[in-house]
Image 1: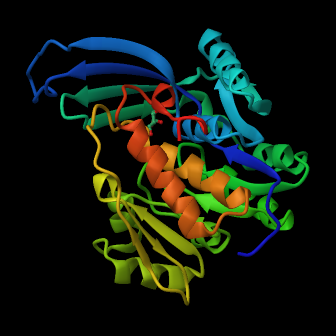
Image 2: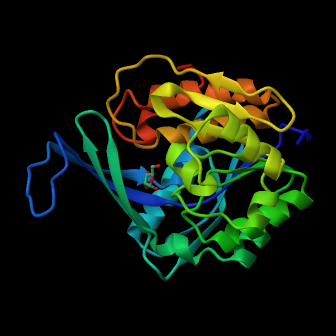
Length: 298
Ligand code: RIB
C-alpha cells in the first residue's frame, strides 16, 4: 500500500444530471404532496468525487461515459470548468445518466438513479483510457458503472502501481477479484453490512481489512468514520457538530478528499480526517458539488 504519491488522481465512474426536489417529508404510497423547491444540477458519484478532488487542488482525470446529448455536453463542460481532464470521457448513443433526488427538511435524501450512458462504460474502454494517463497515483471507482469496467480499471491501476480506492455505492456485492485489487474500501454503514453480512463495529472493520489485506474506512455520517488497516490499530474519527441542510453527496466529498490526501502523501488517518471535514462541510449546504468546500474554505 506504500507507493509513490503526487501523480494524477483518476476517477473512473458515473456522471449524472441530478433533479432534486426539496420537501418537508417524502410522500407515502398513494400520497401526493407539494415540494418546497426544485433544482437541476450536475452529479453522479464519480463526478462528485472528481469535483471534490479538483476543488482541493488535485490534478484530476476522469474516465466515464455520457450521452451524445445536451446534458452530456453540459456535464463534460462542468467537469472542465473545475479543471478536470475529460479526455477519458466517451459519448454514447444511450442518454446521459440522471438521478431523481428527494431531500427532506432534516437533510435526509432518497435517490433513484437511471444510469443511462454510465452503463455503457466497458472493460476495454476503461482499461485503455486509463492506460493513456501518465503516472496515476490514485484510481478511484464506485459502482454506478458496470463492475467489469471497475475490475479492468483496477487491474490496469495495479500495473501502474497506483493506489486503488473503491467506494462500493450504490450498495452491492463486489466480486472477489475487485476486492483483491482494492487498497482502500470506503463503504457507508449500509454498504458495509451488505458486503460483510455484519453490523458496523471497529472489530468488524478490522476483520474485513485483515481478510482482504486492504484499508477499510466506514463512513458514519454525523458520527464520523472508522479507519481500519491490517496489522494496525483501528482509529475512530468523530465529525464536527454542524447544522445539517442536505446530506446528498457528503459521502462523495469524503471519498474525493481522502483520495487527494493519499495522493499528496498524507498518512491515511490524516487523509480520512480531511475527508470527514469535507463531508461535514458539504451537509451544511444544498446540493452536491455546489456544497463542497475549496482548499481555501478549509
Ligand atoms: O451520492 C450522490 C449522487 O448519487 C448524486 O449526485 C446522484 O447523481 C447519485 O449518483
